[in-house]
Image (cartoon, rainbow, N blue to C red):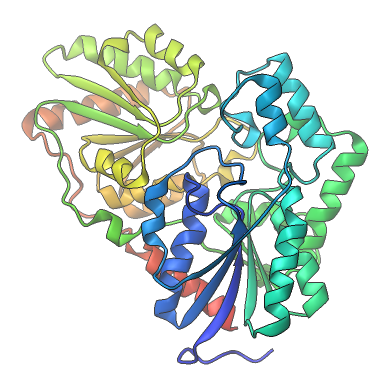
Length: 439
C-alpha cells in the first residue's frame, strides 16, 4: 500500500462509542485527534452512539466545543443492558470500567460483574455493534476513506473494525487505550473458561488482523507483543494521551493563602494512597503555621474518605464532585502541587493516566504514588516534573513533602522553571497518527 503524500487531503472514519456529551478521559483522546487532524490534511468523519441512548458514566457538555465546525458526526441507536441494571439496583449511575464507582464486594456488584463477564463478550456495549456496522457500511460503500480507526474501550468496538476490514478490504487502525484481557479488573468479572476463551480469541484476531495498532504506553505494547510471537514490533505504535495547548491558555495561579494539593479524577481504594495521607497528616502537625488544603476533584470512594479521616485530614480536605473538563484545568492551575495515583494492581507498569499530561502542562510539582520504573515514572523523570513514590514509602514521601514545605515558606509559588513536555501536545500527537494513516 503506497504512502499518501502529506499535502493530499484525505478522509478517515473514526468509530468511537464515547463522544461528547460523554465525559471523562477516554472521550478526549479521540476528540482531540479529530480536532487536530484537519491541520494535517486529514478530514475525519465520526460514527458514534446516540447521545440519548449511550451509556455514559459521566457527562461533560463542555467538550463539544472541541469538535471542529463542520465535522460530520453520525449517531446510531444501540441496544444495551444498562437500563435494566439501573432499574434492578435503583442506581442512577452507569458503572465505570471495573465497577470503580460501585461498593466493593456487594452481592449486587458480584452478580452484575458475572453477567458482564459471561453474557456480554467482550463487554456490555457490544449491542451497539450491529448499528455502527450498518452506518459505517453505508459510508464505505459510497465514499473513499483512507482508513478506519476504532478506539476502545469498550473493546467490542474493535470487532466493528474487524468486520469492516474483512468486508471492504480497507486499512484498519485499532486504537487500544487500555489493555484488553490484561486489564487490572479482568479477573473480577468471573469469566467462565468458555467466556474467557472467546474473549481471548477476539483479542488475538484484532491484534493479528488490524493493519496498525495504537497503544498509550510502552508497557502496554509489551503486553500485546507477548501474546503473539508473529506480531512485528513496528505494527504497534505508542501514541500516549496528551494535553491540548488551547486548554492551558490561562496563566498559572498558585495560591498565596494556602498550600493546595490537588487530585483530579476517579479515586478508589485500589489507588492505595493511604501512606501519602499519613505522611501529610504528620506534616500538618510539624508545620501548624502552613494552611494546607487537600482537594479532590471527581469521584472518590467511601474507603478513601475513611483513610482521610484516619490520617486526621478531614478538616482540611475539600471534596468536589465531577466538573467539566475546562473547570478541572482551572483547579490544576490554581494548585501548589499535584497528586496522582496509579492503581496498586497487577500489570500497573503500563497504566499511564491521561491526566498525567495535563498535570505536566499545568507546570506544578507532581507527587505520584505508584510503581517505580513504570511508564509514568519514566515520563515524569524525563520531563523533570516531580517524583514517583512506592505505595509504602512513608519516609521518602514525608521527606519530599517536607522539602516542598521549606520551599513554600520561602516562595509560595512552586511552579517549575522548565518542564519539557511539548512533545505530548495533542497537535503533535495527531501528527504522529497522521503519519500512520498515510503510510
